[in-house]
Length: 167
Image (cartoon, rainbow, N blue to C red; front, side, top):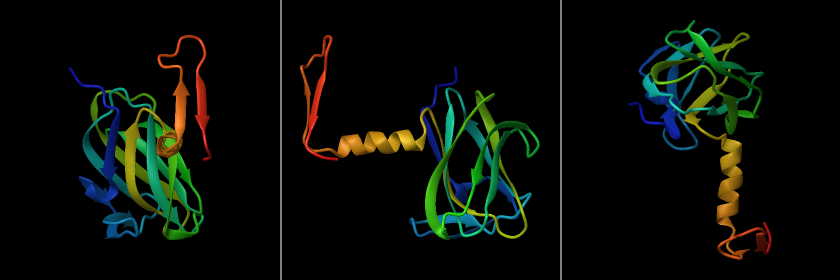
């Protein structure tokens, strides 16, 4: 039985194989992959995709960007998602983008295939396969950071009241 994964974060620099990619120091600590050109790719072996519905990618670029194709099996394998990356204001000016993951289940080799124009497309710090997008997690984390939140009655039967100072 393959367990259902809820979150699998992969540091981009921890790829199992690649074509055309270089590692570099990241402003977000550790390393990222960069110097990505059209047709370059990364492979991550044995990724458990059971229950996965989304993939977030932490990316940055000062150029027009390109696309991350998420494929299984090979660089031309089943396309399970894609993310369009546009200018973020710099190669270390990070943003998190999301794609839905479809037609994927079980443990598989995952390929990130990079497409776009000429020159360097963008940098990738990490990817995260999950069951909700990063933007949803940002909202959840913001709510969890509120210090003066009151929810009543507890337990809730028909109506719930939520009181808080300010966000």
